[in-house]
Length: 381
Image 1 (tube, rainbow, N blue to C red):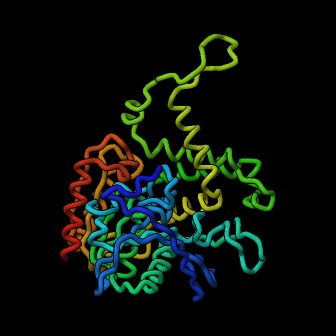
Image 2: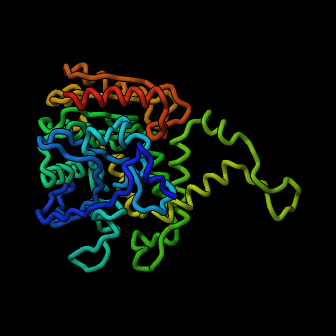
Image 3: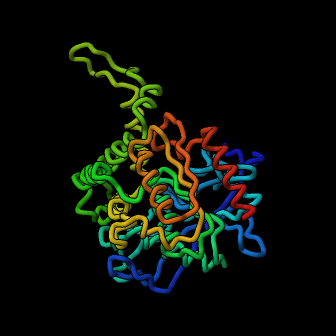
C-alpha cells in the first residue's frame, strides 16, 4: 500500500493535462498543430515565480516522478528518493514540474494518440523528434505556468541532454543546470545498442511495420528483448555479479529434463522485459532511442563544444558514476572541460558506485548528500 503519509513524501498527486493549440514546428520540418503534455507538480510556486525546478525524464521515464497517484500504488514515482520534503529537491523550497515528453506513451501526445488528419492513432507516422523539440515544448509549458526562469533544470541520462539543450536554446531562462550521467553525444557503441534494441522490436511478427495497433496487437516479444538489452547496459558487471552471481533459480542439469536450468539473472531479465512490454509503446521506444542517437550538442557549432557552451548563462553541476559504462565518466569530463573552456561556472563530482548507469536513480549517500548541498545553493541563489 502507498505510504502517502510519510513525512518526506509529497503524498497523493494527480497528473494534469495541458493542451496547446499553437502549432509547434519540429526540427524534422513537420509541425504538430496541437498537442497535449501530461504534467505533475509538487510544492508551491512562490509569488516571484522564482523557485521552479524542471525535471527532464530519461528514455523510459514519464511525468510521475514522486509521490503516489492512488492509495493502492505499491511504488512511488520513479525519482521519489530525491523529490519531497527535506529531500535534495526539497518541495518545501521548490515548485517541481515533471512532464511526459512529446512522443511519450503516458498521456502526452505521441504515437498512440489520435492523428486529427486520419482519425486513427499516429503509430509509425508520428513525426521524428529531436531533443530540441522537447525543450521548445517545455518552454511553452513554462510560459503557461508563468515561469520566466527556472531555478534549476535537472536531468539524468537523456534528461541531462535536455537540460544542456535548455542552457543553449534559452540561456536567460535557466539559473542552474544539473547534468547527471549524461553526454554531449552518444558513442558509436551506444548507437549500436539502440539499433540492436530497435531491430528486436521491428523483427517481431506482431510489429506489422509499426501499424500493430490496427491489428489489435503489439510486439510484446521484441519490446521485451529490447528492454533486456537496455537493462543489461544500465547495470555494471560487478553489480550484476553481487546481485545474482551464477545462482540457479530452477531446473536441473539432467539430460532430457522438461525443466532446463534457469539462472536467477535470466528470470530477472525476463520479468523486467515482461513488465516493460506491457506498459510501454514500441513506436515510442523507437522514437526516443532515435532522439538519443541524433543528439549532438555541438553539431551546429562547428563541432566545437566550447563554442556551443559559450552562450550559456547558468551555473552547472555535472555528476557521473564510476561503474557507468553506458555514459562513462569520460563523457561527463568532456562536458566539464568544454564548460571550463567556455569560462562557465561548473562543479563536477564522480561518485563511487556499483550500480552502473542506474546509479542516478538510487539514493547513494555521497550522491544524495552532494545533491542536497548543491540544491541548497540553488534555493538561496
